[in-house]
Image 1 (spheres, rainbow, N blue to C red):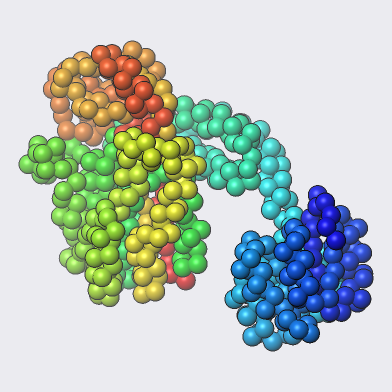
Image 2 (tube, one colour):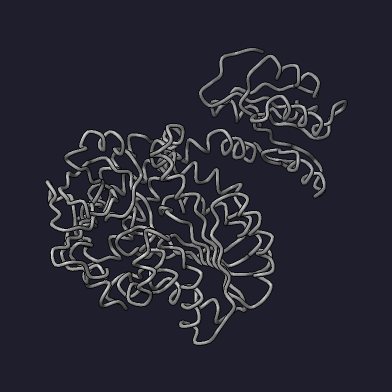
Length: 523
């Protein structure tokens, strides 16, 4: 019975009533499938050990080895081989047993040839058909996306377009459409340029006007999205994933679908898109200039003690001010599995009484920064797709996921978000600066900054335009646009070689600024 596999696929049908299957076999063969029929489980196992098949149709009730027993042995020897159980039994216990033993589908006799063909097509041809449909849909949508790039004017239009391109990237990656992903990247490049123009022109208005004039910003996350949960429920959980891009969120979102109804919105990180600014703005509800005025001792000693060392105090103050009354607050920052395990032990108590709980998880940020320092991580996270994949792998086994599942079990609603994203940077921008300039690769503050390529940066000498604490008379603020990163002329080659293709943040790009804020309601 050994034969070359057909393009459609090779099927082994195991059934002691094979003579009754003639119409089924004829239809499958007419559709291009090669089908071998055999009457008992023992012969089927011998055949499977010597021949290659794409699918097994397996009768549950046969003399000798039962179908379930054959399924068990197939799963041990060929765990990825699709198996469909076919049985006369309509008992739920039989169906549950088959599914529990990892049958890929279940058909109850009598069944028509068309029903069998439908199941076979879904399993063998379904992924390819879905991928082909994705490619056709993107090809049809491409012209419309190109047109939208030329007409987008507002934050909402740019953010919605960016969100759609992220979804297309995930779909095309799953479909294995590398060529179409290259075309998509050209759209993303154009979108990034237009988005940066918007931010350069309108950011000063957004941070001063607020309200409906621009996007929700970091300072709006708690009053606009989290506080309403606390007015309706006795307890709520805020989860902040440090340095998580929109694409990384969309990749882990399906893992949460079994536990929560998910309602996602988009908001904008403040500038610079870096933790000392953006995350303090979330927890404090204040811009950096307000924070420096509120607690000057924190700001002046920031480099020494850590700008984000007081998020627990900011969170408690912000919740009290927003709600208008005191509510117990809990804040934990998790950077290791040991810290995560300790947090899990306490979380049940937090969620069982009226309180606002905030958890900050630092793994994605550690992964992003560690990539530049470790060749191993660099190889594992070579591009945005690999970075997404590593994020999913971590999240599946993380205490962050366990914390969310615990909240779902307790019926506690969760607001999940991130403080800023990161950008895969490729192009160096040479900057001339004095020794007082900040050391960051995507933003620089200092006196008389000068950039060789002005088109690579968003610059201002007005601290108020960025809502930053006022600097000296000659202070300049420069933030890299698109995929640029700063290099000094004295260390040009060193910085280019070291940081080209790094994931960085602190500048102006949709990957850093356009962020998810998702309400998770337990199912």
